[in-house]
Length: 433
Image (cartoon, rainbow, N blue to C red; front, side, top):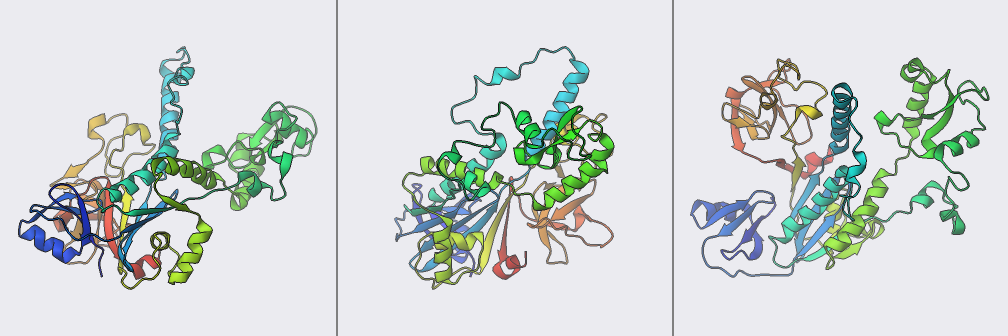
């Protein structure tokens, strides 16, 4: 059984979702029109009030994936999973590197202006990488609320005690006395903790430096757990690349605990409280019990079904709608290497000619089918008369095992998409990933 299609009347009021077959009949007979693709929504062109019933919307909020489910009267009407972008920070870091390098080369004596932005930041400002994920969590909920007839909103949020995660025995004054208690700077604490001794050669004294166990370029942070004392003789480029420092980085990365996800969920919880004061909120422990009672497997869309508050399931779709954000604008400031299909370097090419967005009637992110095949996917890039096609799981779809490119003449376009890739897949196939 496929997912439902959302319906609104000619006055813009939300009605109950209908089956895809009925939606196709309404569109074919001219009684409805498509007004939105994500989620797919049609508008009736004739007067209709419609039959309404109690509807619940379950939301499994998250940093990487968002689970959404619409339930009513022991039926799961719609279930979907949204995959969010994780490359915002790395792109901004690359852009910052290029900008600083350019200013160092061409404006060596330029006056520093980095403090000018402090006064312009708003009170609720968030870093762009965090703001992107928070806004998508909120916007996807609003998209469904706009096409559902007054649903009851249920949202799962996360609350984490960061100090307790680092030190399970912490209590009382320990929350006020952190790692740097009694020290003026991070460097002073690290040197005192290591007894002013190089941790590589074990020599005491000399010129000491503070070293990141996991390099900043590999996701390391400035927390004291990731800092160590190293002398200037050991803190060399060779040791960073192949020596003892590189070995430490590899060993530490295998057992490294990151708290970025927990920090994000704490931020998201407060933003969701403000954005949806009418919602009913719950935590993951309660969701686990609800999912077990319903007999559902662990997944984001099944979590959303359990969160919606449904007590039993009589009808459930066998297909899942997958959404994934596709980045069409690939500016040269973000590109460390030339894009596939480009014959000239970043320096030689003109900026407006560097990225091929369309070719011979096909555009980036178009949903296409390969002729004489069941393979369907999205165009991720062009190379003259050929292109690269990927499925929703980033797997290349090819005709010949020798080449990743597929000739444009062998393609049939199914739909023209914007920045979101949309694909319905069977639940059994999803479990394989």
